[in-house]
Length: 200
Image 1 (cartoon, one colour):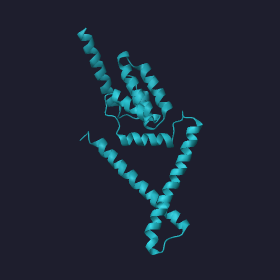
Image 2 (tube, helix red, strand yellow):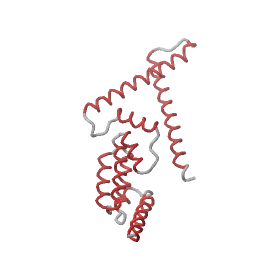
Image 3 (cartoon, one colour):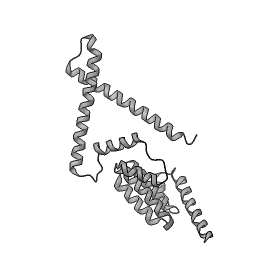
Image 4 (spheres, one colour):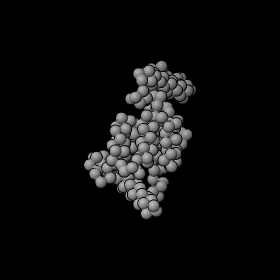
C-alpha cells in the first residue's frame, strides 16, 4: 500500500510542477499542449477568470477535469471554484474557495473592490435588473465624482473670484481624471511590487 501512496504523491507533485512550468507559455501554446493537457486547461481557465470571462473559464475547467487523472480532479475542482468565484465577482465564495486551496485569502480591500465591481459591472449571468442597477450606479458615481471635482475647483478658485459653472465642471472633470490616473498608477506599482516580492 505504501508504494502506491508514494506513486500518487509523485504524480501529484509532477502535476504541480507542470502547472508552474506551463504558466509561462502563451494561450496558443497551452491550447496545443497534449502531455499535460489538464494543467494547461486549468491555467487557461484561471486566465479567463482574471479577464472576468466566466463562460470561457467554466469551459476550460470542464476540459481540464475531463483530461485529469482521478487523483488530480479534486484539486482542479477547487481551482475551478476559486476562479469562477472571481470571474462572477462572488467575494464571499472566493475567500472560502481560496482557503480550501490552502492559499492566503484575498485581503479585505481586495474583496471590497470585487464586491463593488460586482455591483457596478455584474457578470453576464446576472439578470437585466442587476445590469440596469449597475448602469444607474455608474451614472450616479460619475455625477458624484464631477460634483467633488467641481467643489475642489470652486474652493481653489474662490480667492481669485471663482469660476463659472461650465468651466468649473470641465476643470472638475480634469481633476477627477487626474486623481483616478494617479490612484491607478499607485495601485499598479503596489501590485507589481507584491508580485516581485516572492521572487526576490
